[in-house]
Length: 335
Image 1 (cartoon, rainbow, N blue to C red):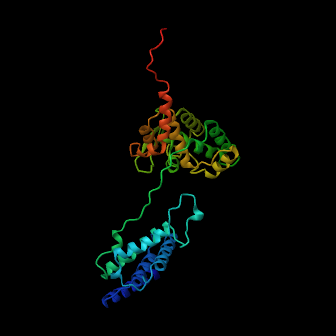
Image 2: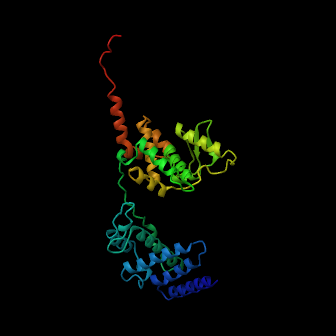
Image 3: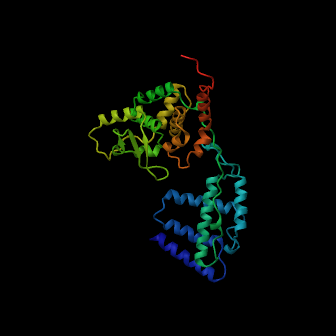
């Protein structure tokens, strides 16, 4: 109730300020902050992040706190954003220690500050201090990531993968075998981590030799044919857990990265992630002669194989060279 009262009183002060002919950014921000504090649908973590965004906005835009909201223009916002973009270069995934630059800004902070700016100016529009929100016409800046082709050297060989999974299974932890089955499932089906975690026994059709992934990244379920090793693994798991209802999850863990990191060190192979197991699956398909559009469809890509061509195209080319080496127009020798 206290938060609600503060929000009402703050909004009333803002209306009085508009009636006097002016409303500063800080006055609108005060109303917005009170609303956020009173919103029970937002977690405390989200509210804290919004607070960081507002602080960065005030610090990085000189004169903004006292600026009348009607003087905030799209050009001014673009100038502010452009200044921060120059000091917030793209950082590759995994480089967390380098996430912040000398200005103390990251692209995440910039996006959060822009979201705060939109919310604050929405308050000004509602109060009648400005006709339209100039921040609503701006789109979030997205920098295209370079797509790197998958290297065979970064993926385990068949023998390495067998030893890798064996180390996970024999680690001695309570869920070591469950982790090993989870890793096998990802590698044998190309499922994403979340897709695999939501597979139930009712989704497994051993007679038809397929598994249905109900929860997918694009929201459209897909069925994946099972390779022999996947069929054998699921048959073994089902035989050991035949009393479980069809709504029970097939996999008893939802991630296994720590176990994978340990096993990779012991085997002496490069570290591989859950997503790397998808790369392993698609690589195996292409090396076995599966065309890229089909491999992309089995992996859940919706672009007809365009992305897969950029990531795995060189594997297709290598396979084609091997196939072409066996073709000859020379006359066949008589029997």
